Length: 380
Image (cartoon, rainbow, N blue to C red; front, top):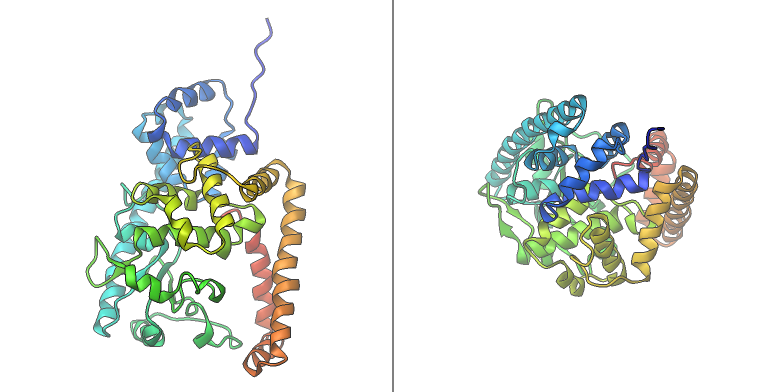
C-alpha cells in the first residue's frame, strides 16, 4: 500500500500558522493541531525558522513552544537552535537594560528625562513576560526640542560617536543621526519628533508628553501611555515603514500590538488617528494574521481587504513580490519623494541647499543603494 502524500505548507500557509503559534495562549486546543502537523511532516522547518528569524520572533516562538511543552516534538536541531537564539537574546536584553540605566543617568545629570519608544519602552514598561522575549535593534527615545542637541552632546562626552553625512542638517531631522559606542549592545536614536512631520497634527511631542507615564523598571525616564503606544505601533508599521503600501507587515509589530491590546482597547484609538481607514485595515489584518479575527477591530473595510490581498500575493509569488516592491520603491522614494523635494527647493533656499549637498555627495548615492536593499529586507 503506497504511503500517504505529505503536504508541506506553502509560504502563505506557514505565515498564518506562525501567527497561530504566537497566540497559543488564546487557543490551547491548537497545540494538538501543531503536534499533528509535526507528525505528518507538514512543516518545512528550514522555512519556518527562516520566516521566524526574518520577523525577529524566534525567542517568543521558543517561549510559546516551551510553555505548551511542544519542544520535544520538534527536531532536536531546531529546538536547540531556538533555545540558543533565545538565550543569546536574553543576555543582550539584560545588557540593554543596563545600558538604559547608564544613558538615563547621563541625561538626568543634564536635567533631561527621556521618553523611551518602541522596544526599549516596552521592555522598561514590563510589557513582556520574559526579558528575552523581544528582539531589539536600536534604543529610541524622545526628548523636548530644547533638549535635542544637548542630549546628543552629553552622550558624545560619554564616548558615543556618530558618522552622519555632511549633507544632513541635524536640526531638521526627525531624530539625531545614530549614535554608537564600542562595548554597548545597542545604538541610540534621539528623537525630537516621534513621527514624520506630516503626522504631527495628530501625534505630536506635546500630545505624547501630556500622557506619558513613568517607566515601571527605571527611575528618571518615561514611556508612552498604552493608548499612544498602540498608535505608535500603527504608525511605525503602516506609515513609517510603508506597510499599508507594500503589504509587508512584521510579526514583531503584530505581537507587540497583541500584548498592548491586553492593556488598552485597540479600536478606541481610531478616534485619535487621522488615516482611519488605514488604521482599521491594519487592526483587521492583525486579527486575521494572529488567528484572532475581530479582536482588534470588529469589521473589515476595503482597505483591509486590499492590505490582506497584497500581503498574500507577496508571500504567494516571488515574481509579484519583486515587481510590486520595485515599482513601489521607485514610485514612492524616487519619483514622488525626490520630485517633491526638487519642487520645494525652487522657493525654499534651505531645501535647495540640502538637495545640492546630497547630489554632490558620493556617500548619498551609496546610502540610497543601501536603502534600496533594506527596502526588500523581510525584517522590516
